[in-house]
Image (tube, rainbow, N blue to C red; front, side, top):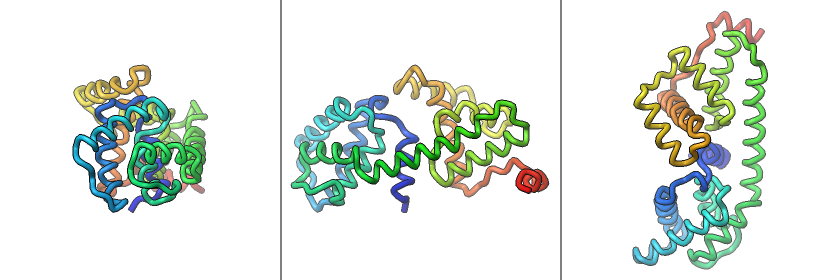
Length: 230
């Protein structure tokens, strides 16, 4: 089972609500809300009533909480169902909005944001040496992947450098078709940073495959590792 911190890190690897397609958000809310009814011991209402609640709630998310990440909405709803965001009576729009407001300053979210800031600072330190040697770059690639295995997070600032280095070394190989498909999907979210979003999608897909297969990313030889860590 994933820890709360891991779930937050995965959420922050995703997209903010203002960068998510409305239909995609509706689908995500539908799936999560169905689980929430089950967790609360309630029956899902008839389709018309249920979808009316979903559509209204999604519109309020776009209007009031565009800065939330899509994954945060799911976490907030689950925390609310567990009673960690105050008392509630039934699943109504008032209940859902109260959960979203209380989630904003909740200890769980504040702790997670602090952990993410710390991880971003640690990762960004790796970019402060523009003249890193070949061995230092290979160490950086290993370290970024190892931290991803631990935290499920890669700061977007690192993505272009990491993606380019892995491509240059023929470790991560994407076809032109894969790159174009990722770019087209990214442009639906934010055309201004579509290139970085596309690279991030392909990079995390590569990392996920390695992690799921239990495959380490080893680029340093045993001798280099001894010299690097005397």
